[in-house]
Amino acid sequence: MSKTEQNDISPGMVLLLAAATGLIVANLYYAQTLVGPISAATGLSPGAAGLIVTLTQIGYTLGLLFVVPLGDLLENRRLIFGGLLFTSAMLVLAAFSTSAWLFLTAALGIGLGSVAAQIIVPFAAHLSKESTRGHTVGKVVSGLLLGIMLARPVASLVADASNWHVVFGGAALIVLAVALVLRAKLPPRAPASNLTYAALMASLWHLFLRTPLLRRRAAYHAGLFGSFSLFWTVTPLMLAGPQFHLSQTGIAIFALVGMAGAVASPIAGRLADAGHTLMATAAALALGVVGFALPMIAPESRNVALAMLVVASIVLDMGVAANLVLGQRAIFTLGAEVRSRLNGVYFALFFAGGALGSALGGWMYATHGWHAALLTGMAFPGMALVYWVTEYAGHAAGQRKAA
Image 1 (cartoon, rainbow, N blue to C red):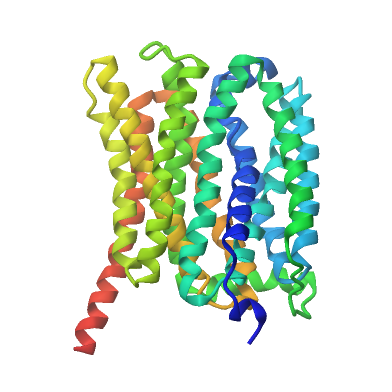
Image 2: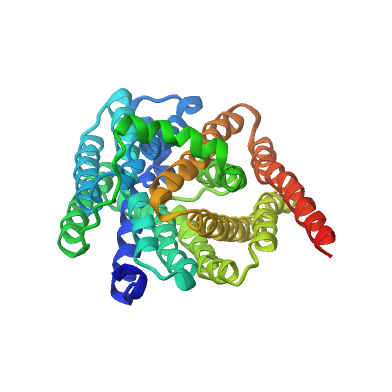
């Protein structure tokens, strides 16, 4: 039995990994509440504004497929450090961008390098005991989700006080600092693998085909994350529009309140450890549907409509937070030797859903309006919930057969 199996991860290491993942993944979301000013400064049309978010997510998806699996092949600490140096360089490029093509290139690179966060999450699982793995992953993912949720209000507040260029310049310095701290604090982890990179890549397809649990969990979260990306692409545009007239600071406060949804992560981890993944998944998907239903039934009153939109953001974020932990806890039971690859494929698949959601949401909002965008967002978790019914039916049939 290895040392990491005998001794559980320390609370200090959990805190470090949670903070690191949050600060790294925040880079994917700074632009979400700044789509308007970035588009105006770089010459992007309203219909193409969604590309600012979409290209970051495409870069992240590519990194998940081609970089994260290296966590099963290369020394993890060095891989994380290299990815963060690259991310810092791309953030500098974004900070000094004056044209659409330059910023979009930087956005693609920011997404590609930020996958270092998804090498850290399996690292936490490796350092944890089996009995507490779900709880540990839940805590680390809580940090990741807080980073996602804090990124939007922080970006808005900084941009309001200065400009959006400062947001990306400051992020470059933060990522560089995180890289140096992790290099100093993380224990080395060299996977015992004789695979070549080509064989490693080929194994991804085999893992996808031979792992029904991976396919199912990825489909569930693609539905939720597609709706999440759509919501946070179009809602800042709506809040800045004629109905609400919110400033960047007002949008920041709105996004800050949505952070309350992160409380669902450790709760979901405990439910998963207790064997309640199936029903907890249904609850998470249902929250995604409710998050889009609430704004659709909001009255004409500006204040009441805004309050319902705040509640919707919290409900949606809770569903996304819970389902992410449930999915990772499930796939991390499938084998330590393929954990990074499983995590990479899982995230790549649901981030593809996120890229679709942000692109489709931006287009629907620009061409068909707010309610059309909400209906589109509701369809994502709605389809995932229909798919969940097939799992529930199979589970119920298995119980009847066993009885």
